[in-house]
Length: 125
Image (cartoon, rainbow, N blue to C red; front, side, top):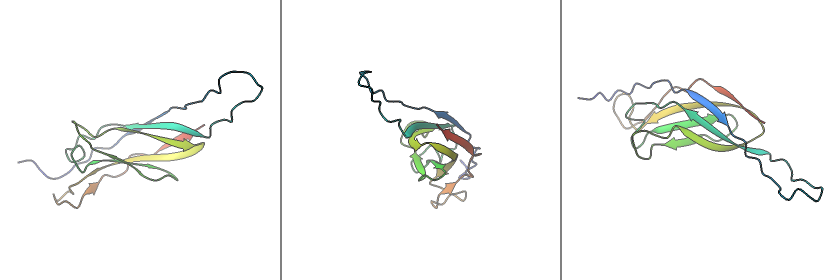
């Protein structure tokens, strides 16, 4: 019989910053487009192999300081997605990831959430 106890592995977050620049094209006329103030940022983390995280009702929560929490739910397949893309203005941010499941450690459907990952500093140029 499989245990209903959820043992969360540490969720390790690593960051890749991708800046998408726009080109005004043409190259003439002497005027230039204003510099973009928002940048696309991809956050990726290691997979949590717990069944509850990788089942309906499971997934990850990504917290970025000063921003709404991003929910990354399990959809289908062997594991929940392990990355998310967001747009952030220039600045420095702290980011963490938490795994969650529909079941709690006693097996009831009250849900459970892991401790946050170690925080990382995200510098958006």
